[in-house]
Length: 382
Image: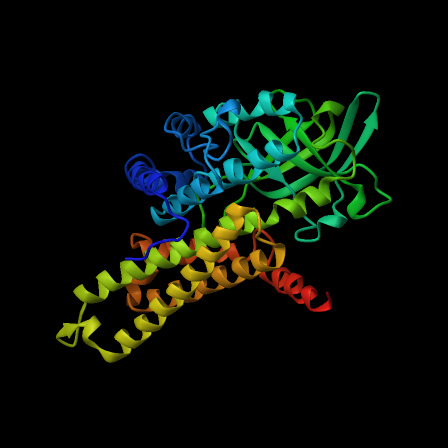
């Protein structure tokens, strides 16, 4: 039994309790949510009541008072339970921390308690039809007019885009500048003139996680909704939060590997081929031994990164390594495991098939893996 160096008794208790919650309250509904392409909104409120939202946000703002380690325990157990429809990583692990780290006291007290309860559902709108990983070239604009910003533009592939009523929009407040012209502006979208949601995007995996297009046509919001002390800090704010965001992705990928390997070992012990269990065949044993070794290597690397992250010492290059390597290995290992199921591996009633479809996007979101390698390569020039 592996012992994580960052795991405490409190975190172990949290791990046990949230595992049961995800398995009992959320996992049974995943098939229905996949068909409707979104989770039922009331399950966000349920998540709030059960303490799943904003667990790493201070109690004075309505959160659970934990650390990022608490958040990562939830991320891992949610992934292990194959609960993909609840976009809590974006809501609690990403957006809530932008508000906590860069918001004014008034902003934190206005938004974080409602996020912790599930009254407000959060999203962060970065990607555009012509700008994915290249955030310096976004086209969404925010022009200041008196005490308001007037926002025009569009976003796509936005997780929680259908339900979200609190959205952090990555905009250009100075079109003449590149990185230094980017700002983060918060939108409360309920009955907001000019704000419109587009279609729910039908995906090959993560089917129940609502992913939508967003449109802004002369949307007016108070200047007080700017995150940070002044305009132009958005790109720096995004870069500062990336190690945490990429570790969330790496932890999820690791949990996917672990679940896939455990499922497959059980399956090959039961599956009979040519009169004997599939696990008795040398090819099966060797290939699974290789998978187990790679999962163990990933686990050790992720553990080391989490220790550094909790201490505030994880730098961008290592986080980029963890993100690309773990997501690539998750795709490789799940593909390897699926092969042992034969035709059954392609049938969605088997968890391995769902994992195969769901994990593929992890090499794209949070910065494509090719971008991660470029970021790592830039360290050569230091």
